[in-house]
Every structure is written in structure tokens, then in C-alpha cells.
Length: 592
Image (cartoon, rainbow, N blue to C red; front, side):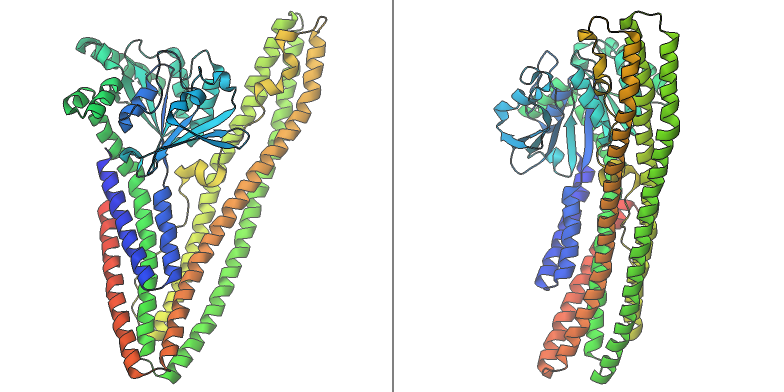
């Protein structure tokens, strides 16, 4: 199990639950709302652990072994045909998502009717993906395990679905088999995976079919070939018997489980989650909680000081705070204007890059297509069409898709830079609020800045979503159908058709891609700005409410004031304890 990550995730959850109970008891809705958002972020944390490999490498059995149940169907023939997402749920629930946007909940026994080639050949049911909620400890802390169709089978749509999911991968589990060893098709697939995935775990399954000498020879061979393919980088291949691991977990047989080699790999995976993913994520959550608790502490201290301040002095201080608050709100509005300008600049930059692609690169590829046609005009129609298809695929389609991938990387870096800039500015505005209240009421501050920016490695989740593609090859050359070539279909006619249709197709797809990217950029920026303004307003609101309560107490009896002070001191003590516990946990996770 993912022991360290699970333990820290649980402790983070517990301290946030304590903070939420504190906020509810103290009747501070703004504070409670901010903490609830952080808590939801913790619960919604998604880490996509995607199982990849050639067909019949035992991917579904491997996933079953991780969760300890025969949940996914397995077979001796190429089976999985649909991307299947396993996530945590308190009860088992299976939902089929269709390409038309509809959903349908199904029973476990019906799963094979949607995710297998036998039950859903060539995806005739037009399934987008299947999502399974399952009460597994493996999935409880935000880990999503993804089963993908095997590449290299006779079913081309399976390979396409797997490639389409690559941009979502946080870490890949690449399954090999001991016999036969790694194939040329797997090496080709591995090269493609490397373009999208930073971390790949190599697992050689079915080692129980080999004796010790054969296993070592197979592992050594695969390691050598993979390292050569990846440019000499050292790799580790983890041996595994998914079949034994599954039986060991179902039977509760620790000896059999140890023979499967799964426990050793699970430790490696746990270390990765803590080092590369979990530590950063949990520390970010705790840092945000510490900031909100810090705001609460300031609010309590301001109210205690205000209660002890004579009415005339308090009115004067509140007036001065109001003046400063108006100036700070103006700064917040200015921040928003600059944010809008940066949004427009980013969209304009994308427009210029798209224009350059359309006006400079694609015409050159069109010219290449014409030149290829001229050089091969003596071929028969079938070979002629084959060559034009190849140029179209290798040139225009691949160029456009590669350009989109580069744009995503570039735009995410720009977005990260801009969001950091405005996050820093928002923190400065919050600091100004706290400094004003501290100066007016003579309290000491502990500065804790919240982290609002996305990290670059969240590339496709926050900003871009699914990677948009150019037209697929089938759609681009629907007029090339070799299976129904009419009599008298000439080479000139083929070229004329493609040169007529392709520019319109390019214009339409450029427009679609522009609209897609523009919408996502604007939505991301607007949500980000809203979140920042919420943080500023929450800080201002907590201080204003504290001053209002202090003024109200000027109209009540001394006994009521004394009771209020006693309650405030008790709340302050609890808030300080929470702050200490959050800080200690954060330091333990980060090793500081």
C-alpha cells in the first residue's frame, strides 16, 4: 500500500477537519468557506496512474492485483477496448460515458459488454470511457488507475484510444512480458509515450512462466533494449507475477504475495508519490490552511485589542482602516485590469502563432504535396494515392498536431509565469491589509502567503484540458477511399480533389482550434482571478467583522464584554494550536 503518502494525506485531512469544526463552532462562515474549498481540493486530488503496454501483457490482471479484486474482465484474447478509469468511492459504482455526452450506470456483470472487443466490437456503442468508483485503499488518496486498450492489436481503434489518453498521464506503468520479450512495436510505442510522460515505471509481468535463469536473461535483454531506445538513460525493470499477486491478496496469502514481487514495486511507487507528487501537493494544501488560520488569528487579536480601546480612539482607528481599505480595493481593481491585459496578450500571441502556421508552414506543405504528385504521376492510381496519403499524414496532419502540442507547453509556461506574478501581487495586497490592522492595533504578524499558481507539470488539467487535434486522416482524405475507387478515377482528379478540399478543411480546423484555446485560456484566467479576489476579500471581511463586533460591545454591559473576551481568548488559543499543528505537519512532510 502507499503507506507514507496515505498517512500524510490522512493527517492533512484530520487537521483540516479540526479546522472546519473550529470554524463552524466559531460561526465564521468566510473562514469556514475558505477551509472547505481547501478540503475539497484535498479530496479531489487526482493522480493519473496509467497502465500502458501492448495487448495481452496482463494490464487488467495487474490492476486487479493492485486493488485485490477481480473487478476488470480478463481473457486470453485482446480484451480491453475502452479507457477505464478507477477512482475511489465509498460504494462500487460503474458509469459508462458515451461520445454523445450521455451517461449510464451499469452493474458489474455488464462491464464486459462495454469495455471489451467481444461485447463492444470496434466500439460500435460509441463509448467515450468507463468510470468505476470502488472502495479500495489504493484509490482513497486521489490515485486514479487507468486501464488502456493494448496497442499493436488488430483493432486499430484500441491503439487510437490509448494514444489519445497519453496527455493525461502523471506516471505510466509500462507492462512487458518475459516471453516473448519486448517487441519493435512496444519500442515504437515507448518513444511516443516519452513525449508526454516524465515518469515511466517498467514492469515485466508473467515472470512466473520463466525459471530463474530465463527471468534474469529476459530482464537483462529488455533493460538493454529500452536503455538504447531512450538514449542510454538507466532504467529499472520490476519483475511481477500479477496472477500470483491477485491470488495472494484475495486469499490473504502473504507468502504468495511476496512471491509475486508486487510488495517491492508498491514501495517504489509509494516513494515516488511522496517525492514527486504527494509532498508538493499536501504541503500546498497545508500552506493554504496556515494562511487562513493566520487570518483568523489576526482577526481575533484585532477584536481583542479593539475591545480594550476607548470608544473615541476605536472610532478613529476604524475610520483610518476604512480609508486604507478603499485604497487597497482600488489596487485590487487595478490588478484586475492588468490581468485582463495579460489575458488578451496571451490570446494575441496564440493568434499570431496560428496565423504564421496557416500562412507560412501549411502552404509550404501544400507545395510539397503538389511536388510529390508531379514526381509520381507515372505510378498507377493506387500507388499514387498511397504516396499522397503519406505526404498528407506526415506533413500537414503531423505538423498541425505537433504545433498544438508545442502551443500547449508554451501557453502553460506563460500562464504559470503570469499567475505567479498576480499571485504575488494578491499576497502583497493581503499583506497591506494585515499591516494596516497591525499598525493601528499594535499586534504582531506572522506572514504566511498562499500559493495560488498552477505548477507546470499540471499542464493539461488546469489550463488546456484534452489536447485538440487536427482532422484525422480518414476525415482528411475521405475522397481517397481505395476500397470504392470508381472506374476512370485519375491521378489528376485525386490531386485536384485534395487541393480543393484541403484549404477549406485547414481554415475550419484553425478556427476550431482558436476557439477551443481561447475559451480555455479565458476560463482559466477568470477562475484564477476570482480565486485571488476571494482571498483578498476574505481577509478584509474578517478584519471588518472583528471591528464591527468590537463596536457593538461598546453598547453592552461590562459582564457581557468580559464573557466575550473570555470566549475570544479561548478561540485564539485553539487557533494558535491549530496553526502549530499545521506548521509541524507541513515541516514534517517537506523535511524542513
